[in-house]
Amino acid sequence: MKRTWGFKSLSLRYQVALGVTLGFLLFFGLFSYASFRLVQRSTDAVYAERVKLAKITAASVDDLVRHSITHLEAAAQWPEIQADNPREQMEALERVRNLFGNFYSLSLWSPQGQRLLAFPDQEAEKEGLDASALVREAVLFHWSVVGQAPVAQAHPPVAVVAVPIKG
Image: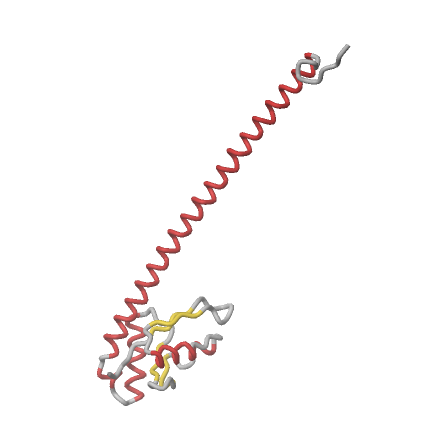
């Protein structure tokens, strides 16, 4: 008697068991693929939402910086700022900060990058933030805005807005 190997040569019990096993494998394979695709689409959707949020936040920061530049350019034309009297300049800096409210500190710098005046006086340095290097870069290279990653754990990222006072 010749023995054959194949599906037909198995008893009915083994044929049913093999068929059920293959069915379960196919079912679990399809279910695994569908789950993987669902997780991938969900991850892509979360990523897209984060990108939208980042763009909205960046646009908001850009608007705030543009708004700050506009205010500083207007304040730079005030006679008190243009004057060579440090007391008048300090009072004007205090008024600008109180009037516009979105500045951490205000300083007057020479064209060579030396700080002439600051309001509030060295408050930023007391809290571990020294933006002098950023301001020097902005003044020396005639940039309007310079940014920096946080220098201290307590501080968020910093943006320096530089506006020329005298021609």
